[in-house]
Amino acid sequence: MNKRGDKLISVYWFAILFIVAGGIVYMVSAFYGKPYDVRGAEADILTSKIAKCISEAGYLKDGVLEEDFKNNFIESCAINFQAEDVYDWRERGQYYVEVDILEFNTKNKLSELSEGNQGLKLDCGLEGEGFPVCVERSLYSIDENGNQYQINILSIVRKTEKNVQ
Amino acid sequence: MRSLGENKLKNKRGNILTENIIFIILNLVFLSILIVFLVSKMSAAAVLEEMHAKQIALMISAAEPGMTIHLDMENAINIAKKEGINSGDVVTIKENVVTVKLREKGGYSYSFFNDVDVSVYPDTTNPEDITDYVIKINNYKNE
Image 1 (cartoon, each protein chain N blue to C red):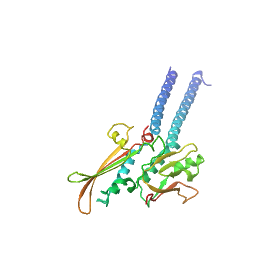
Image 2: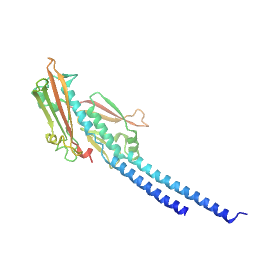
Image 3: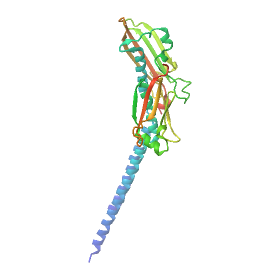
Image 4: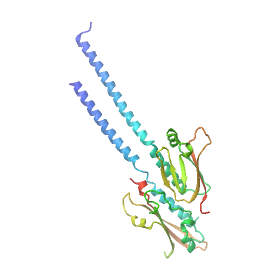
């Protein structure tokens, strides 16, 4: 009777082991099978880069409000939005940046700069992993004459196929 | 001279000991397989390729001309060596796309948005034991 009981316990023991192992295998596979989602970090870095390009040490850079800078804003900031040639990424841009420079007190818009795939903006605010990551930041800046500015930066990174399963 | 009862008791003790040993060995085998599975998943070439490609792309995106970055890639380089990939071919940069390749039929690419000219090469301070990669940000492309 005792021996039969022991065998029965062994069977249950192995059954539990298999269930635990199955759980571990499933969780590990799910964790390592998912790609690392770095779009949040990428959008943050993009925002910082744009901010540095427009304002340095709290001062608005010379020529930022001029038309010439507006037309070549991405080149002036040494940014290249060309993604790798997969999933039609080159045809459908994977980035979008929008910068609004406002007068600080009146909130009058002095300049509006944008570059990239504007269609991505429509997906901002939607919940779910399959949508682009949007990062919005505001900063304060002044010029040499003491004029105050508010700079709003919106950075969007898509690259969904390589960051979300 | 032993009695019949004493012999039965001894046989039973022997059986219990053998069963327990088999039981323990099976458990150990089972756990070992599980640990091997976990380690293989954690250090899988595909996982390391993706991790390093994205890591390098983000580092370059955030870097500025004049910076030199030393990146510890010992695990990845060891795997590449086992797979017959030259240490110098593990990380390559073409235009603005980083590719990390640790297997003959593999590789992972990720793009960076910083428009800079980048040099990437293994750190050969100790040629016998290459563990690091050097990423040098030279200058902006449109300068």
